[in-house]
Image (cartoon, rainbow over all chains, first blue to last red; front, side, top):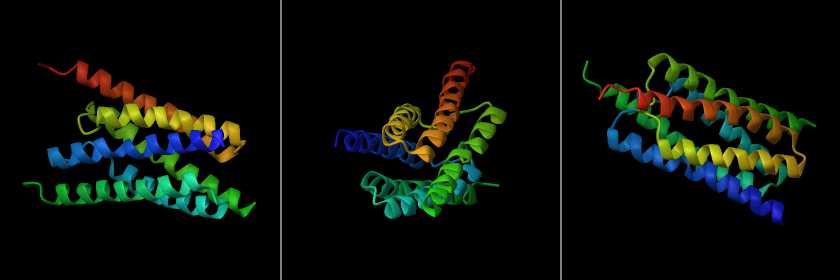
Length: 88
Length: 88
């Protein structure tokens, strides 16, 4: 049970970690500092972690990766949108 | 056994995802686009995932989070170093 709490705490931290990143990228309207390759590979990886969590019936993996996918997809959307709207 | 392969693939992707980010941040010598709060919380969270992996005896969690810690600490180091060395 205590181990599950550790997993939940770990998952909570690696999940909320992306909130300040989303806020900063949104406020600065620039995603130049974020690597496009990182965002693509990371989104794909988090999706597979989510599937792994389902197959292992591991609640911390399922819940946290579900939220991380949402935040990571937001960052990918910002990256595409802010890069496209740049003055040439 | 197949589930373990999925975990390994997921872990490999979320691990190597940070390689292009490290390369870009190093090449541009700028970590302005990376949120300091994200780096701090993420490093702490990945460290706890690593501990969770050890306690669950979960190989994919242990190996991948071990490598992610290394890459995430590098990004934190870049953030501190490049911000410090900025012309004022």
